[in-house]
Image 1: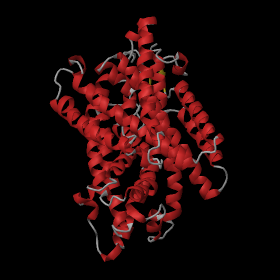
Image 2: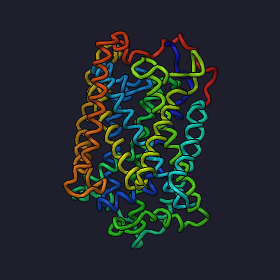
Image 3: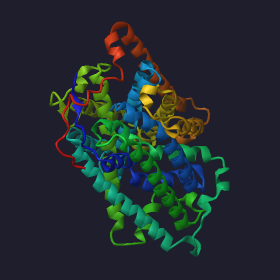
Image 4: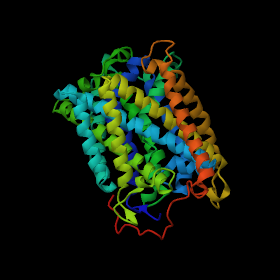
Length: 477
């Protein structure tokens, strides 16, 4: 089926925006950083952010090198299908769908709880409003979504800058403290939990890999992803350092979630209400970014008939602006999951947001590791005529090592992160779900091999020929 996403519609800047917006800097500033300080008691959180950012950036090198060469909208699916085998590709596709859906749906709980706290009402009603907005934007051209993301991201970075300036202008104790970058602060019991929460803050930075079919220049996928990890790492490290400066390194681990807004209040000028509004908008744009990625996975896998072909439904027979079938399916999944949590009376933040976002972060970290292995084992036809040793050997090897350490820290601390009682088996559900998704994908690939060999043979190979689908007339962003 020669139907493709609209080519040459996303510039390198547009790709970068999608990755950064998915990470949601406002959510990390107002929720992630204070919660990490409070739950782990790690004062060297700024240094931890830098180390995790470096690990994610190195992991992204092999992933984006493969994404550029394969050119598949279902990035992990296509990468592993070409690098490790078709069965691994389907397994990766199912894990990616579980992980991305978990993160995207978790944000509805956070959004609903945030607005319910500010304006009143049931959290699930506000979640329903967000579902409608994201669903409507999700079936429109991606350029429209990108414009929304650019505006929200720009103001979010401005608020972070104002927060840092306010903290530095009135430091606790009258002077700047650099304890946050002291390596000795890493040798504490809560460091594993801090690493895990920092990893969660970067999830979504890999989004450009799924937009490769729509990129003006495939090479920009790597730059957008790696630059996104580095820039966000610096922003989060500086914000975490400023938080410690504002109240003192000894007090920051006991501060509550209202600390960022109280620091902004020092500036005056209405920055607190602006930050509250931007937090809500940042959650919505993060949902929209993940929604777009999920829709492309569903579309691309359905285009190859690995998933039901109806999910590749489009308005045009050749070039489409948005994968309507995949988008509507993702909205339907979100409705079911949000409805289930609401009917069960679950806490939208402590249960829905925390558990689902942790599941998603763990799954995507596993996929980044697998992509690095695929890059190291990729055949010569994928690596190209002049493969670089850094992209295809050294960076993936370093990333696989560092990522394995981070994944071990995450799995080992998943219980305390979720607030589970010591010895509780429930946290083991998260890695079990990831393994089950991978096994399901592998079994389905085996089924296709035996019953529909033509579909199995085409796994990861369904991207239309370059000249079979016309390019967009112009580039908007």
